[in-house]
Image (cartoon, rainbow, N blue to C red):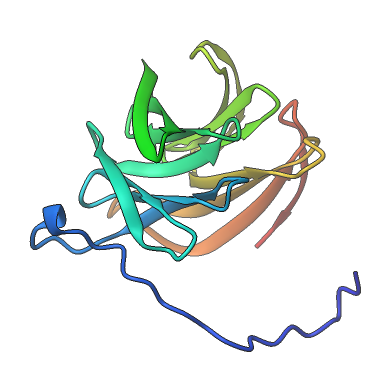
Length: 195
């Protein structure tokens, strides 16, 4: 693909994922995952819900979760993993319903989760961790005490992990300015970072 190719948006559509049990709360879609069936699963952080959308993007079912979901990733053609603060909850689609399965606790907060061939990558505060699907910590892949580690993704070949970070200004405990995109190898070696 030509890296200088200009892409043009031809159309845009917006869909409502609010349901009656959301009450007066607004929706904050914190994660999205598309299954091979064409169904889409979204995490609604404020309402503590995982919502299954049909092929027309209507909410067809949902399940409540124990904490605010911040990320989601596909595990199999019918199963996803959802990061819930300091837990990972597995949820399957079965007969058009969302069914909660196993879950495991994390010794840290989690803001994002990614999966590739049986390996889970979980971001938490200032680090990126590698876990097995059963919840065993393999190792801490990356850590930077000056940056908040936010999101992560794995390339299709599984040999690169992309991580977004924001500089932490400790005097006010706020984030500002200097965001970075970091590329790591699967053993945690820093390949490159972009400011």
